[in-house]
Image 1: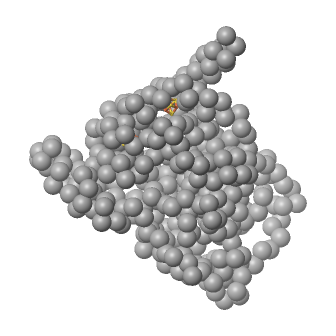
Image 2 (image 1 turned 90 degrees about the horizontal axis):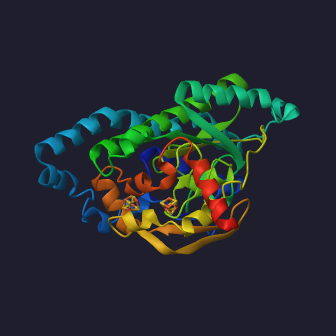
Image 3 (image 1 turned 180 degrees about the horizontal axis):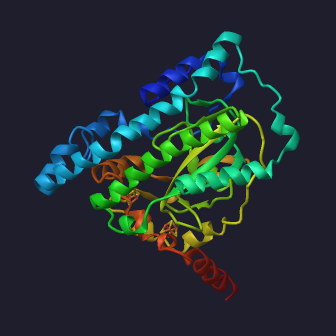
Length: 355
Ligand code: SF4
Ligand code: SF4
């Protein structure tokens, strides 16, 4: 019997509807991690510093009326579209869920684009649309089951992985509310964007696809983005990319067929070695949440090898929530320092290895 986990109302309804068909889909693996929202529903969290129970009161006590007013402004400006994005990830799936319940299966029709795979022209158009409209970069890969969160299921096996930048000028203010506002802004924007890209693919090319919101979600997107060649996981578990360092959020769109060429690459794996000699994020974390000794969470993940647990969420999440996104570890990471830094750090790292 599947144990339901925390999630939005739309997500829980979706998971409930597809339970009888899970074996036909991409479901969690015995080594899958637990999704973070589980912790947000616990009593530990509710009464912790920064927890849901105390958040506004603590903001008022620590920052006075102005802080409380800034928080209310942030919620009023960003939350309606955040909620819309999270809801539409699931309401857009209604035709698929209706089909599954009527026929017992999501009929896999031979898609005409399979004959012209890898469809470089469409990939180019999609990349251009994603960049021009939303300033999003994309990669394409196959989804390992170890990255599906415990108790969750996705409809399709192939993943278009999307990343969107958080501005350096704002993240540099972490842990001030302006950095948190940027975190929330990008969660919201990227959520709207993946829904829009999924609709674009459905309308223009009749592709079956499922977008998923960057906040919460069904899968562990950080190693997925690494597998798709967009970057690699740093010591604190977050993705490091050549463009933004750790200043991005990630969201996937799952599609039914392998219509494009995989962008998989381990070219950024050297970051693991770099992190061994750095540790700045760990030293800067105000709650000591970043583990020195990582715990292996899954072995033999295709294209990745081992995945590790890097953060004690019981220490990180209350601070993350109290500041609306914390981001101190993102700010201090050398890779987050702007254009050209990735190449400079790589050159210095290679030189160090040669000496
Ligand atoms: S987000 Fe803040 S609390 Fe969490 S690991 Fe990073 S620095 Fe530590
Ligand atoms: S701060 Fe240093 S150790 Fe931490 S993720 Fe960035 S490069 Fe790696």
